[in-house]
Image (cartoon, one colour):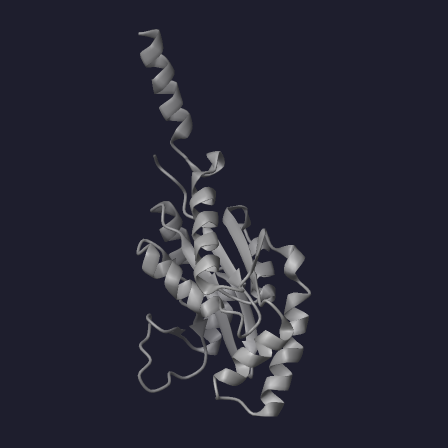
Length: 210
């Protein structure tokens, strides 16, 4: 049966496992597309336009925002970032779901957009704040000051958990992935998602009358 594609928002504080879960979800279902953000920052060595980011000028970016062609956007350290609308709409028409790795602010903007009715939002929580800090330190990438800043930001992000459709506690990565798959499977099967369902039932009833 025909189905309109979903917009799957996956958010979490840094270190809770969002990026790992996103990679696992896409490995499980290769029909999923990842929303490639647009940005005004310069490409870094090895980054490919259209694969890692859509690199654009500030003027072009602002024009897209003014035309309503960004589902969400924000300024980070002087550079603009956003999620282009056109590729998402194309995927929806093809019945393909788009996965967004965004924070709560980006999620709010997408839910408030014209495509908000097709959003499924999921927030991933760590099992505890000490465990979250342990994971951040385990990366071995950040100073104590940076980790303290990340933990402060994490507390602010966690405060928005109730804005999401689903909340998962990532105390076991495999179990959390299984729950994430179950959410996606159930949402795809909801009656309102199946565009061809009414026609199918009508034909079914006509067979009975025949």
